Length: 274
Image 1 (cartoon, rainbow, N blue to C red):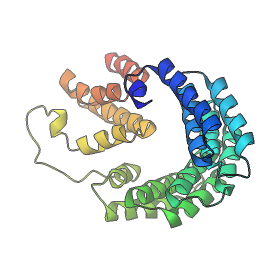
Image 2 (tube, one colour):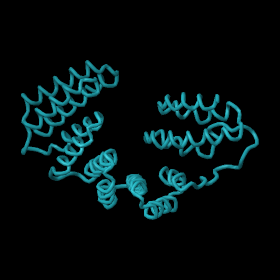
Image 3 (cartoon, rainbow, N blue to C red):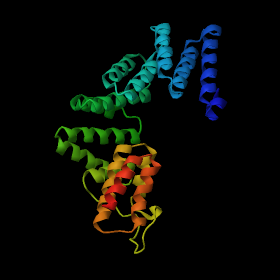
Image 4 (cartoon, rainbow, N blue to C red):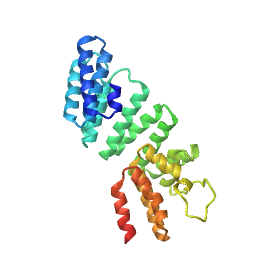
């Protein structure tokens, strides 16, 4: 099964995933194995661009295993599918179902809590999102997860006018890890300069020499596309004031391309040419 996936042969992988799911259903009584192969089949269908098949598999699997084994993973995938379709209310319903399942391991529960909070944000139900971020803040299992939760808690607080509370969290993030990912993003939220990583050069710098390279690479790595676009757009707009060379612009246009943000690139070209 894994060899098909590695070769990116999605249709063959889907066929193999279905065959294995049917085999486990008819040849074994191990419910956890059956559930795993069926969720893998559903994920393969979704990845192959057949969401209706993925939903069919997941909903049939839910009926087959209800009250027999935890269905949290089923509800997690269904929630993600609804989120992808911008059906945020339905996504939250599925995430609530996942959270209601018994014996959830803390990392997985935290993942669902964050997804629920994120979809509440999408619906502009900021007060409810804040409550979920606060709950997640108490159970975050590692420093990165805690920093991510605190940042988005602060971001959400600022959106309902709780500026002092948000700024306090941003300052804590900077104090705890000034050069970490969310520590650096917090600098931007407070309109603070990043701490210098090298002496300034009189020559036109490359991206490797840019003080904000770690921040840009981190934003790309964790797919924080909204923050990346806002940060790079601001940098380009600031450059326009100083009448820089084309090389200077390319330092911030290239990361946009790396993240697949092509529309902002065209927008920036338009503004530069004016």
